[in-house]
Amino acid sequence: MSLHNWINAEYLAEEKIKKFQITFSNNQPFPHLELPHFLKQEKIIILLQALGEQEFSPHNSDLFQFSQTYDLLHSDDPVLKEFAAFLSSPEMIQFMQKITKIKLSGKIDLFGSIYQDTDYLLPHDDQVPGRKIAFMVYLNDLEEDDGGALALYESKNKTPTKVVKKFIPKAGTLVFFEVSELSIHRVEEVLTDTQRITLSGWFYG
Image (cartoon, rainbow, N blue to C red):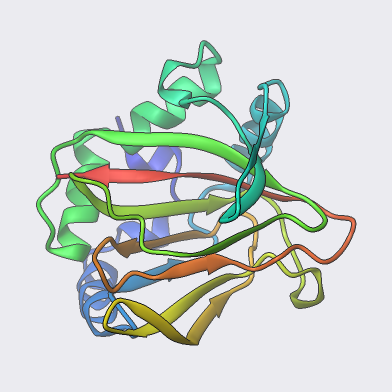
């Protein structure tokens, strides 16, 4: 599968990838990268339309409150099937391995999520055996006042101490980070009558 079908061409230049390698490994508080305008605009639109046809179930606990699809790797929707095939393609796996220097198996998880007014996800590290890289693709724009930012924490003895960086969702942006005991993050509470729509998951090794 050609990455050019999904990704804006600027991200496929070899010199860009070398720059991303350095940025990813040096970023604090743990290795991560934000790639704005990663997905082509027409792909964002059809992904939003496809997700709109999916069933979302409420997820509630002390740690989180939001709505999520089932595992989209089992979706019958042709757009979502193509997107999952793109993410798990040898070309995309190689792209991620080049940037992160992390060996990946080609296995992924993929689901859609919607955060609405008062929804949140408290600090956690995503550690599950085999997970190597967590990723999220934003499908709509939020403003700072809307809440819903992804916050990355500095930690001490596996306990979050302070927020070091925040990412405000913008359509087409890909954010990913290395999963480890350091990768403590949260989704800040959505504060307005809006939606935070993402496709998220993990690359496994």
